[in-house]
Image (cartoon, rainbow, N blue to C red; front, side, top):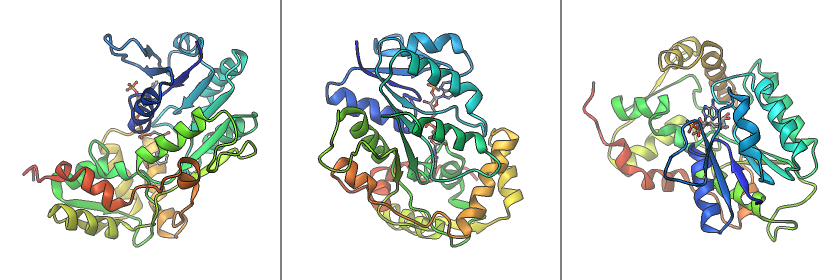
Length: 290
Ligand SMILES: NC(=O)c1ccc[n+]([C@@H]2O[C@H](COP(=O)([O-])OP(=O)(O)OC[C@H]3O[C@@H](n4cnc5c(N)ncnc54)[C@H](OP(=O)(O)O)[C@@H]3O)[C@@H](O)[C@H]2O)c1
């Protein structure tokens, strides 16, 4: 069999990608630590259990790669997996990288360089996900429970992207054999994926309030306080600190950029933040929790 192994197949982008590929008749294998017993195209896969890797790769020729989450050092777990993928003849890997560079995390950059160096393997660098504004992400959790965004990013803007558009871009790259009518080019190894517009947290809060009627206030906090909040939500120490430092970068304008790569790859413009909010309006209903 040839088909696509979707790591992180139950996550925000992986789940949407599986739906798109199934809808196009592409054979998929959805990887999860807890595969569903009644879905024959799922497979048990755990980054921390290398014994699960060969069986997940067996018979697939393309991989959507979501590296281990909540770590600043993915390489030790991912490199042996990619060596195995190369060994079994995987011709295309689409890595879910990031446009947001975590400080003191060279391993993520090494991973992107490793993928880019192989013919046919490509890196997606998405901007911040719009889905962060939904629970269970700590940002979305706080909006839902308290109508509040706490951020150290100030007025800095981000080209927020809907995870469904990342999935659509990945689907284009995983299904087009060569020469996509839009933008797929054999010599491109790297795609910057953003939404159509860069927005600050204040802009986003106003759109949510406007579309849902739920007021959302933005409370400025320092980086250390932000890191503490991430830790309290269960993130490991180093990752919480790195993620909090991202806000400092946003504040400087580093993530205030947009690209046309989603349109070029899929032939459709990426969703606006207002469209995203419209699609999830019920999510922000006041829970009444203090
Ligand atoms: N959020 C953002 O703004 C943003 C921006 C740019 C890039 N990114 C990147 O996007 C990636 C995905 O992040 P996300 O927060 O959106 O997560 P997600 O894809 O929604 O969920 C995490 C996925 O990873 C799987 N997973 C968790 N632990 C695993 C393990 N030990 N072994 C195998 N699979 C495991 C989970 O599957 P099971 O639980 O079913 O095993 C789940 O499908 C990250 O690499 C992040 O750097 C995120």
